[in-house]
Image (cartoon, rainbow, N blue to C red; front, side, top):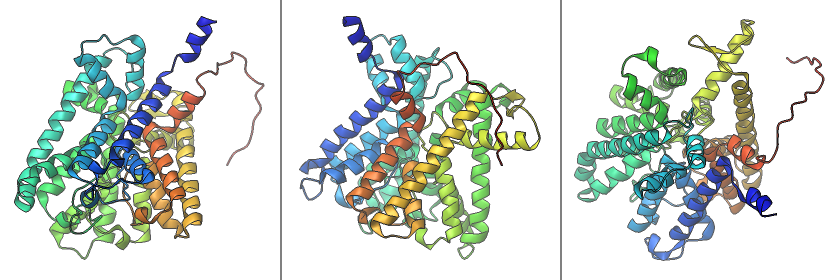
Length: 444
């Protein structure tokens, strides 16, 4: 009996990840509800605090209150802490505290850490965690140092805090900003042509979005690209394509009326930020419907595995595209850089795509029906939530409780990953060795 109880209480890696994120979100909700967290020193409504905490931990950036105008210095610090935990990963942060305290990391804990950061194997996971912490701190401090002179020029001594906040928010692909003191929800529109802020924020977003494993490859192999993991090669290739193609579209079709310098910065920034940062330097409602659909696609794709970004991931899109190419060419296997992809990876990629499309479409549909808003605006909001991006066409603060709960669910699923939730729920199921009889079915 005791052995049975012990077995029932044992949690899988996937369940630990979900419970970890949920616990941090609930703690953040409680702290943000306190009068100390708001500028007016009033109790913040539960759903407003829950929405903000979920958005911060899931590094999304959708907000119902402008971060600078509504939250106090303490509230902003809580949000920043939640962003940092969510960006690095709850399990990674917990492992860091365990290592600092001198506790030995068990095999189960190492397995959980492996799942949390999408590492290929358990071996070397502690070393990789140390690398993640060091590279995160180094890059965020470097980003803050680069932006501090500009913000201190504009905001005085407060500029140091703003530089740190935006550096962490950009690297963690969160999209929270402190620019709304004069014009709420303005994001970085006031710095559309400012080179230091533009370049620094874009670099932080890209660096945070390509994944820690890719940076580990870059650190160990330098410019010897042939030594990189195949996954790193796919990620870097996909990142370049997903930056270049939208930039060309935005430059020639959306912002042709701007001055050349501002046109280049604005086009590149809008190509970078949907994957999955949430900052913007232009009013997105002024972009054409075609441009908004391109942003939706970028938001759904998101960043890369093991990164601070969300979305269904660049590798998922690459595997599906490569599978289609293999089918067109009548090749049996999906291949990258002279390597064959396991069939289960293709199945997982197809499942992830289907899940994201279902969540995206039905989330937007329910919000549109509930709120009586245009379908495109609601689909944009749903894609932003499930891709943990944070871009909005300005409807977030106007939504009712049901629509906000839908966005909360989408943000949570987008951050922990749909497969993680399924594997956590079906952890007790066992594979059966038997197979059903095979029969052909025509598709296409």
